[in-house]
Every structure is written in C-alpha cells, then in structure tokens.
Length: 318
Image (cartoon, rainbow, N blue to C red; front, side):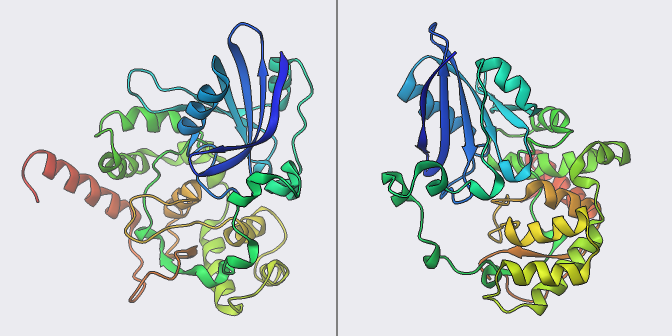
C-alpha cells in the first residue's frame, strides 16, 4: 500500500493522529493514534464517527485500526456496523500484523510523546482545538471518593476478553442508551470466575488499589503534581502492577458525571472494581457528588437494574 496522509485529524469534537494507506482499488487502511490531550471522545468510543469522517475525506473503503500507546503496543480494529448494528471491535492486534497489512514499517509514538504538539508540531493550526493546560484544573481538584456500586455498568467494553459475550447480551435490549444499563448489568452477572480470569483488567488486587486511592486522595493537596502522586503511591503499595494501576487512577482516571448512565473513561476498571467488591474509590466527578458515600453490593444493584427494566417492559412498573 502507498501512504497518502499523515497528520493530525479532527473528528466529532475529537482529535487524533492519523495515517492513511491506499491500495489503488478504493480500499485502504487508516491507523489512528489516540492523543493524550484529545479534546473529545477517544478513537474507540467515537470509532463510528471517525470512520464516517475518514470516508467523507478520503472516499473508498478503509479499515480503521487504533492504538493507545500508554496501554501497550497492540491495536484495535473497528468493524463497521451492518444493518443498523453497533460498531464491533477486534482487539489485541499485533504490530507485526499491521505492518504486514500495509507493507511498511509503522512507527508508534512513545507513551510520553502522544500529545497533539508532539505529533503535529508546535505550530499546527489544529492545536487550537486543544485546551491550554493552564486552563484545566488539577485532576485531584476534580476527584472525590464515590461508592463503587454507584458507578455505571460497562456500555461498550471493547477491550474486554469477554466482549463477544457482551455483544450477544446487548442484542437482547433496546438499541439506545436505555438499553445500556440493563445490558451492562446482565453482562456483569454473567461473568463467572473463569471469565474474570480471562480478562487482564481483573488480574489485580482492586480492593487494595481502591483503598489506596482513597487514602492517597486524602493525603494530597488538590494542586499536587504527578511526582507527589508517585511518591505517595510508593508508600501505599509495593512496586509492581497494582501500584501502576493505582497511579493510573490519577493519571488516567475513571471519569463519571453523577447520574450519567455510563462513565466517560474507565469502564473496564469500573467492572474490575465491582467484581472485587471494592467499597469506595477515587474518581473524577467534577466534585458533583453530594451527601454521604454509601457502599453497596454490585450484584444486588445489577439484579435490581434488571428487575426494574423488565418490570417496565412488561408494564408492571413505573
């Protein structure tokens, strides 16, 4: 294939770094890197909008692959919806497969080089879409402790090893946001110990990580920086994957607007926290939660969500 485009690329309020390759027969491949300072939805959460934008600009039929360098070196393919279905995903695609597909080496930026200015240059006109850092409040100032049971269910867990099971369950419910809640609750209840073991998100001590996040948030000033977070994290958990996940809760936090039916970021970790029955966790909410934090049982909440949905569908509830 021949490379025909490499630059920052805007889509549906978001911004990514995009490479486009074409084969000369109206087919091609588009490779999207999610930016650390992407001002909109991620290249996975807005995959369908990104596909539509690529088709409008380049024409033809391009397979779309995306990568989040901070999470590793594997890619995700967004498979276009068929007959009104939702976009589907193929995960954990190796770098070697991508390079065989396009017939060329494909450089991937380092995790600390994924900002728009890193990949587009300091003078790029599309940098105007990215908010200035000094205009953003410190992440700790936007965080608070919430009950894990209050967090929403997964709505599109494309990176989960059990995503095929989710897709099958999702077909049972309304094809809109009102179906997301019961489908996510149903999926959670369908996960047994073997399925949890299949998903790498569940291979951590999430009760310890969540408890440490609550303590860390209480120790730090709202304007503390990344070095402060790392220092306190090293005092709370031993070096290793669990401590890494603790710091990710502050550098790449779970983001939830209370009463919203889904989280903006962190649905896979939310599922893992619920499965571990962690009572509380530090989450970005914009400080919108009021009142006492009251931990609950996620399985009972899931059962209640399903019962309420079917009662309404059968005309036996409000």
